[in-house]
Length: 202
Image (cartoon, rainbow, N blue to C red; front, side, top):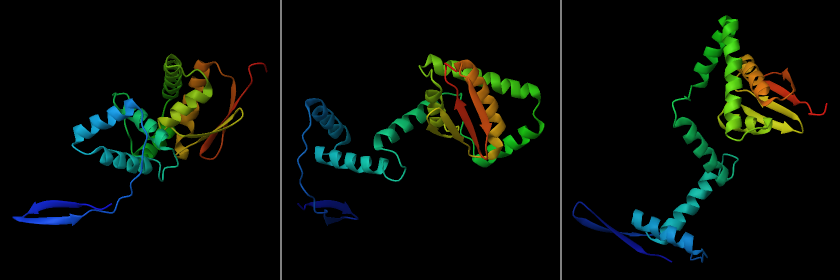
């Protein structure tokens, strides 16, 4: 199906041939139908245009980042929630690394005790939000961009952005493990930390 669009510029009227479109049928329930019409009215577009734009956006959201569109939206919503408060900031990785290099060199014992305490307090906040298991907390921290995490059985591999993060995250995780009452062995690797969670029974 083809169509014509007209627009005016400099006192002249131009006709533009639109791209040939294929007609498909989409079945929706009453709720989706109402939403489509509301959005179409708000955007001053046809329902067909809204559906085409939605499909294009769905494709773009899941194309290239390794996540499904639903996960991408969920990830974006979590970031928006995190950044909507004054408790978090975005720091350039080079600045972050320089700060950590200096802290690793000169930070006092009191500083590291404070980091462990912060980890403990963060874990209590996670528990209040319903994240009571180590996996849930690590997943949440991964969403907050602390690190990337891989899990196999009771072994968690924490992949760091920079090697200088090693001590900070190890101490932070120590506080988190205490608050969660999780017994685990923590092993330093090269740009990674391995956590082996011990079973409750032994």
